[in-house]
Amino acid sequence: MKLRGRIVKLVHTLLLLAFTGLVQAAESPRPLRLGIMPFNSTLALIKTHQPLVHYLEKTLGRPVVIYTSADYFTFVNELLDEQFDIAIAGPHFGSMAQARGAKLLFRYQATLQPIIVVRAGSNITSQEQLRGKRIGLSSRLSISSIGGVKWLKDHGLQPNIDYQLIERATHGAAIAGVAVGDLDAALTTHTPLKQMPTDIQAKIGQMPLNIHIPHLMTLTSASLGKPLTEAIRGALRRFPETAEGKKFFADTGYQGYEDITPADIQALQPFVDLTVQMMRQGQ
Image (cartoon, rainbow, N blue to C red; front, top):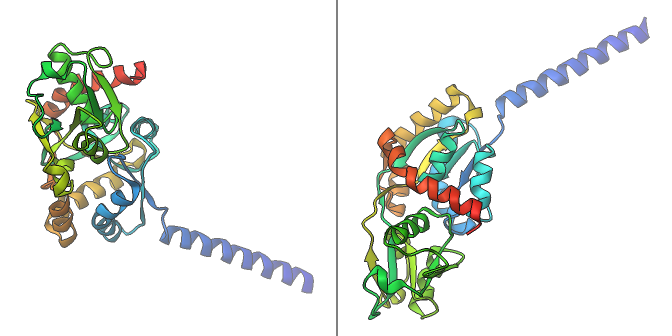
């Protein structure tokens, strides 16, 4: 009887431990993976997005961990493979993910306008004068690069035939390459240009392109489920009015969130088509 009592007591203990473990697991949900497109260094991305991460953790009641990728090609493949719960991605990547079932939540209010940066005093003032030149960019798959390449194609200039594309690690590196004369021009946008040191800005000029593209999109994985997706959507909708949100949008210049419309997706289709083409060709 003593042995039987010990066995019963042991079973009770194991059940209690198992129940305690289940309670702890329920109280500590797994961290949400926030994937951010690698448009800046990992440290810079983490620093910039800390107000957003802290707000989401507080509002959703669960940890949020930032992830990024080594390059744009890896990022878009990880995005389409649903390796992120939440993602901040280029609008062309967001459109591609939506076709795979991802839920698009918002885009930033600011509009992306690709520009071509040239050295101050350069005689390059038109697209035709870019023929035979070395043009830098942060990645062939960034939306500024895709937009710039499309603009050049629309004006009869083919990449790596009429001009040479040179990839640099970041937008800043491409802009600096123009400033010091290593590159004839660079494809970028106004945001990274404004973030460059004043001595670099003094050495460059710009050619705005007549292209306006929806900004970065925030989306969730199709596997996340409707209740959590809607909780994230509601949290983000309130974010701009919070102290964390005001700091985030002031620091980044993204201005706020906008709903994503069918017109946004339709306007992006030519850029998505070119992105897929460049991925397939390895250009």
